[in-house]
Image (cartoon, rainbow, N blue to C red; front, side, top):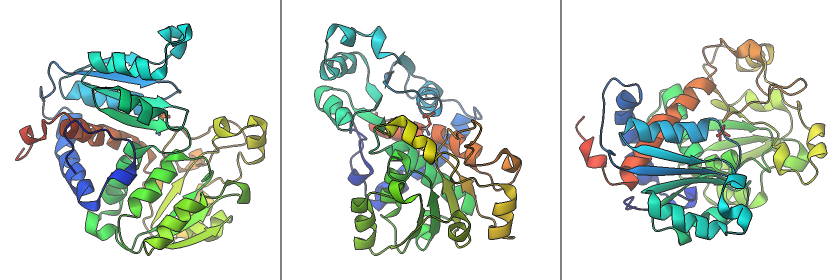
Length: 326
Ligand code: CP
């Protein structure tokens, strides 16, 4: 695809070769993300970071990525501090802010809202998480992490077996990640969730129609034993129509050192999680007794958000050529 000035709204818009383009550039960006090299490629450019839902790593890693490329950032994190409280629409807000900024990054709880913003804005819009539907840049950094942690190149993603665990009904990161992996061949998806929180059937059908295999179960111990990657998620309490219902499922899956070592044995199987993990008593999808385990990839995974998002900015704002050849 032609990335220049394009919106990044859904994994549905990408082909496999687009992922190669993004990851080749992300790999070059790592030296800049770690300040081993410096870039002013986006000097004079302005990012508008509009977060209408809480965020730690997505908002700050987008911001970090833009600063690392020499640009500047404004943040809006509180709808109550905008003129939307006076009745201004989200579309008008996006139209105005898109006139100030060169690119907008938007997180919003309402499905369809980020497309509305993209239609209204003259500047490109990047989806930073929309309701339960999609979180495309998280999926990109997740796949980038899988490649690095498993020591595979993109062609070697074919044939991967991945266990995806937790609230698969509401989790936007797993919706985008399964769509992204479906661009490859012969992926074995082991989908582990409580029965009421299974992966939406339209996504399962899409995986099957593309020739992948899908095993749905609710037994964590049984499911993770055959996986090359374990991807844990939290129960998305904020997506339940009655948040108290989420209490029934919090803590239903806890991966700890004993279970991991028993089921995985001596294999090197990365443990991933988009984060945040729920560290409140009774939850803890990944026990802190795994925090020092070499296969716990969650903090490296979060760090990978910076070079991947730098690559996306460089492509969308048409400065990628400045990095080719190092
Ligand atoms: N993974 C993720 O979206 O984290 P934040 O909610 O902290 O941005």
